[in-house]
Length: 436
Image (cartoon, rainbow, N blue to C red; front, side):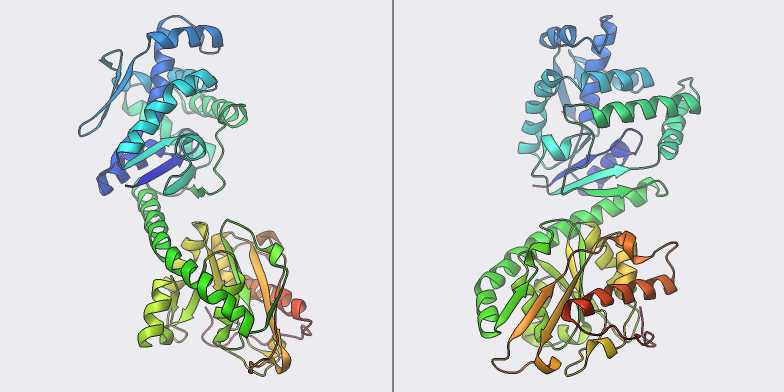
């Protein structure tokens, strides 16, 4: 069973994208907005103001809505197919008004949940991820600039022969956005675990493919999380005990949401110590050589590690890391790119991967410092893992996203790592020839 929730303001393309994804995945598309539009249509045809709460509630007993699924969704209002009559700006405003009435939402809630309980579905609306399907496998909050959405809706209405103007559509859209986002009941806001996707400059097909990618990532994560948490639960305590690990700053770890974790790199044990320390699943960026080791390779692959070629192109690794972070995952990277045992981390070279990922994922960065005597692992040697506060993207100095900015951001991030361990932040060498 697959359940996908797509929320967002009007004109972001929710319905069109949802229909395309439903076709690609062979699942049922449920246009929840059409349900509210149908009630708005019924109310207006009765000569009732959609803002007259008492009158609207009184009419609910006279409304019978049924959904039929063939090659498309057919909505029957008291036995009659509403067709495109519900797709006008006037009905959009009426739908926004009636959807703010708690009794109307309760009237439709059971219908929507019953459909999702029996079928693999994709639903779009304004509170699917927060109210209708709070346990959806994937939650998307689809946004676009008001101007981009108004142009799309204007073209759509013109193709259907509706006489209007771009200025009128934009004005009505802005008014509806305000009503939907500020109402007391089920406002149009993203769920805490929703992925915010801006498709202002994306085509319908590009938007659908991106959402399908996020679904695949979510399903892959679900599979690997069980194994990951099993190993963490069984081996974590042993690693922490025999590694003589002392953790500081654990309260700084965000409980959810995408983030990039950056640490200094001393040895192969770094990944295991950090994983044993964090309460949530981490996706480590690991060198490709580790994947070729028979048992270890299969294990880290099953645990969701990201393969990187330190001597070749890392476009795929960077792109996958960015997508994972945007999907709410925690990705861990070692900015130094190599292990540096017995070396002061302040005297090592950096690569640009951390700055590059943070920019394109628009995420906070969590600095972590591994500190131990002589910067080298040894039996029974005490290890300190110090976790700093998340660094907001705004503090990394981005303006346009350039190689120089990625380098500077990586330096700033690693400066935080160094300060956690008390290492002197001496002038850092330039990135080596294999920088990202």
